[in-house]
Amino acid sequence: MIPGPTRGAPARGSARGPVGYHPYVMSEPVPARPPALPTFLTWTIVLTTVLLGLGVTVGNDLRLVGLLAFLPGIVAGLGTVRQTVFVASWVFGATIASVLYFPDPRRADSYFMIVLTLLLCFAAVYVCHRRMARDREMARLRITATAMQREILAPLPQRTAEAVVGGVYEPMHEDKLVGGDVYDVVASPYGTRVLIGDVQGKGLPAIGTAFGIIGAFREAAYREPELGGVVDALESAVVRHNVFAARSGRDERYATALILHLDADRSPAVAAINCGHLPPILLGRTGGPRVVEFPDNGLPLGLADLAKPPRVPSRFELLPGESLLLYTDGLTEARARSGEFYPTERAVRTAGQLMPDRVPEALREDLRVFSDGGQMDDIAILSVSRAPAE
Figure 1 (cartoon, rainbow, N blue to C red):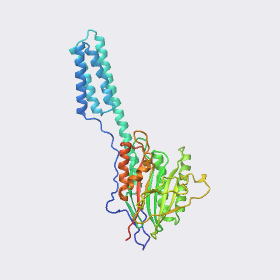
Figure 2: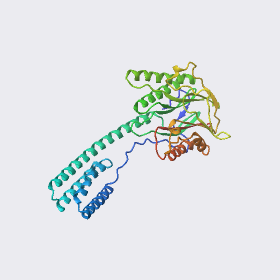
Figure 3: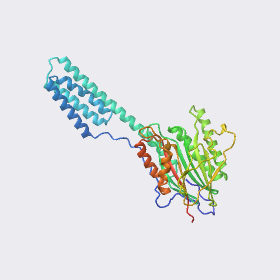
Figure 4: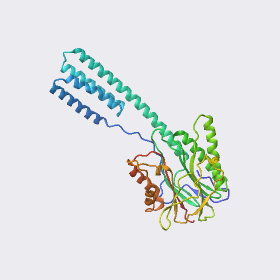
């Protein structure tokens, strides 16, 4: 993923991180498992026994047993086809047995009940079959989209001559909610360039824009000596993608991004251009963590024509032992059950209690606790630290 060194020059970077870092492993979305067959069997027997018992007690067994005809429909929305067939067969058999054991003087009503139960059982099995086929197709699409996204994103951690970049990345698996969070690290002849961004919207169109940004960054970060040239290349990539999208009848998109540059001469200064992205948090400095404020947050990629002044890098120091925490709005816009957003102050407080390389994973776990396991967007959290001297 990181461009190789020029001929005769020592290798500038490696994908291997320091001890304690663990690269993520791509996981496939796993659909929720239906209740086990013994569970359905138990409830079916209990309900049948209760309805038959009430029928014997009140003397109206056939009408109460007829209520079992709706049970296969409930199972069709929760279980598998096999489970639905089993419950439907049980219900139909119980209805036949009830009619034979407690004959009704009105045979027409008995026949109607049997036919209605049979039709409802067949309908339940058909609906369950269609639901399972749809779920398999959606799972396949989610796995494909997630695999595409993680195939192009570099595994973490990434180590270069100037920086160690670790973190966590967790895509959203819900239907139509595969997001467009991106990140990358490039070891160039001029130093290390780091990108984190978030494309507007969800789904495969957002991933298409994200891929365009990643490709442009990897090329420009190695070629352009100035950080402004790298950002201009990203802007052009988004604009070209939007032109193509408009011709194809799709929506245009923009992307927030934060691009960092750490000099090859190991100067403590860091250059950064913020294109409407969330500001980083500086960790490890005396006085505790603090949010790095930029004079101008800038416009997102794809909207540069709305502002005449060009994007200008901001500079601040990142000393040995310090690190920068980069993140996307999957962190700040996560919600608790009460509707409250995850507060940035909480992230700063959590980050201030840990070593920098442990912060991304700790924040992800804290986010899960805060949102009670609910995830509504991609989550990308990176930790950028100064690499120790050779």
